[in-house]
Length: 109
Image 1: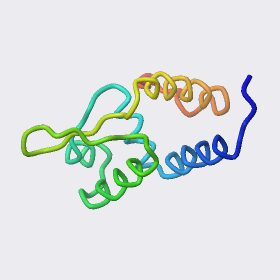
Image 2: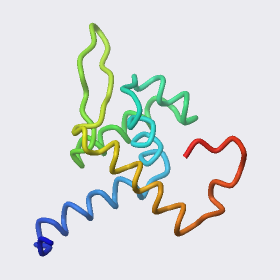
Image 3: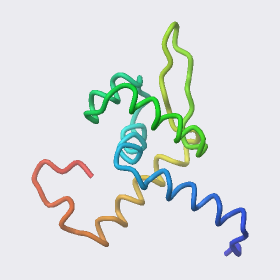
Image 4: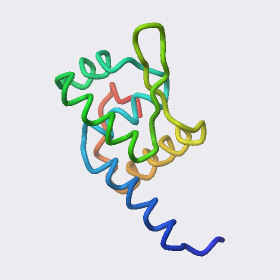
């Protein structure tokens, strides 16, 4: 096991900051399965396009998402393929800590 350095601590704090907002957490969870356009993410998460733009800028600053040009538009994706399985594992941990968060039949966790 690698010992944690101040750099590791700062990186983990950035990740915590990314998850501290429900919209940012929703963006990360949505992008774990597919790339998406900001307008589609805004509609899915029920926020304005301005809010989405601000939250995507924050996640870019944290190094978790990146913009990919797609013609005249840009879509977003996770910056690294290791992030999607890590987010899946994090969801499993959340279910251990708070098992009632996903008790319904329609749960897709």
